[in-house]
Image 1 (cartoon, helix red, strand yellow):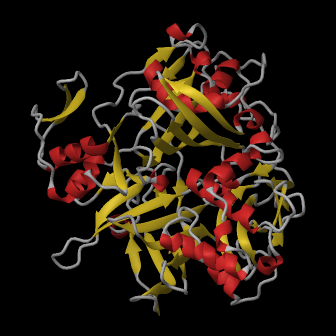
Image 2 (cartoon, one colour; image 1 turned 60 degrees about the vertical axis):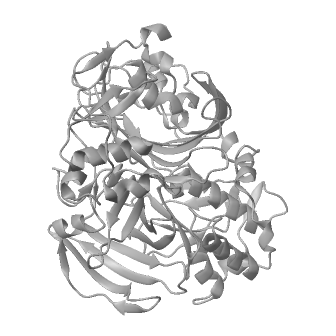
Image 3 (cartoon, rainbow, N blue to C red; image 1 turned 30 degrees about the horizontal axis):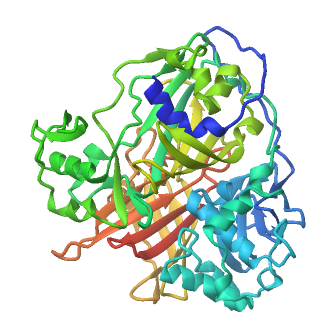
Amino acid sequence: MKTKILAASIALALVGCNDSNSNTSSSSELAKRPEIAIPQAGQFIDAQVSGLYFVKGELSNEGEFTKPDGTYSIDTNNPSVTFILGNRNGGLVLGSSSGRDVVTPYEVVGTHDRAVNLARLLLTINTHSDNSTIVIPDEIKDADVGDDILKKLGKIQLDDLDSAAGKKAVDDVLTLLGKDVTQLIDANAALVHFGTEGSIGTLTNRGSDVLLTHWSRGSNWTFVERSAVQRIRPNEGAQFQIAIHADRTLGEKVFNQTIGLAGTSFKLEQDAFVMLKGSNDSTISSSFSAQYLSCIAKDGEFSWGTGNNGGEVPLCSGEHDIELADPVKEMANSASYTYVLTDMTAFQSTDERYAWEGGPEDDAVADMGGAYKCMAEKNCSEQVLTRFSTQERLDENDKLNETLSGSYDPITDVYTEVASKEYVDGYHKGRVSESIRFIYPVEKAGDERYVDFKGEWRVRETRPDCEVAAKSVYTFDDTGLTMQGQEFSDSCNLKELETVHYSYQNLAEMDFWWFGTNLAGASKATLDQLNTTVRWNDKIGEKDHYKINRFSYIPAGKNWDRGVLTRYTLDSAGKKLVTITMQKN
């Protein structure tokens, strides 16, 4: 188990646990999930942020601005909150969160790069005398409909502040605010800021201390863990590569055989931690993935063999030499992307039981640290699980710096972990990997939880070279989707959408690949599906036109459907073509 749990938990090791002797039943009954009161107010903390616009509950509600200490109010009957750098007339939609005592950039925007870039932007536009408080400029708060500042804010892409297009979007805002465009805070300075007094790294009380009895040893609850690598920098001096989790360019047969995503499930019994049959957190990365896809494309049997240096090498029907299929050749050496595919040969074939206590040599769960430690010691709580930390640690013999944001949401009952780790010496020196992980309970093995798309979603589409945005409403029902509003026609011109009903099968063949893949219903998606990157062929006539869709979603609200789904479409060189944000009305 040590390899399984270490792979699943090593980034959790920085999360602390308090001492407790609380007990749960040793029977097979499920422990009762505790009731945790929804707060009436929370704080937005980078430092405390004053003047950030927020809308509680329904998107049509009138919004307010956070107070000088970053406080925002919460509708306890509809406890989701949307944050906007702007005002009622527009601006940059940051994201949505369940009503929490404290939210940070990580809870709102979801990924490490976007959280750091949001901090960079907020620190740069801050009008306070120092960074112990961030005050949003009046030019943003008081802007009228159609003002340039709101239009320019809406063009900022938080995953990209440093490319030519990304820098221009930020520069335009800074110029309108009367700031020198060279003043944009860099990423390292933003990370240092996170560790200063009053910022997220120094907070010790970020929520309830009520014990999560269902997250405890002996609770008999089953847990699902889903994760996805998001970006990798292979070495110092290289650019970041976006991780691709699935490839449709070889046809639907190959896509359907290789789309499975990494995940594990485990049960918290009194006498043992049980890693359940079917768990698989193993991935195939880099050029091995291109060989894997090429093998499946020619109906070969993929397996692993031993290379000349003793390491594992891919085999296709027993052969070492695997000729790459044409559609994946360019990806094998891409500077912009890297494959990170699930290893379909590595699913666990039986349940495996492990001791809660004992020494590291015993594979004891309590010694694995993090969420596993507080599960073993029966003291998990929102306070314990919700931490930001940076630490230098060893990965075998290599030293690395790890930045971790862990956050437990009592409303969704989901633990979300955003991590970045950089190797500072050894063979992998300079390598950086960024990932996201979700852990949540279900009642029994085989159960799953989903985001159900049924309902009305507000949609906004932007393009880097266009000053206008296309706004529309997507209505999902039992059978599919109807769209109303605007779309881009050619270049930067807008046109009215045709009133056409698309079935979920139609949508699955287009951008929304997950529809129809889950037995619980065609309209539903898992959290890992909504945080994937998929390569596809937008073929024009007989000419191949490869594109990449990158999705990002953080759950909010009791039914997980109050978050903001972001979809970026990029070309094969990594250039962003389209950004679409969707939020349920």
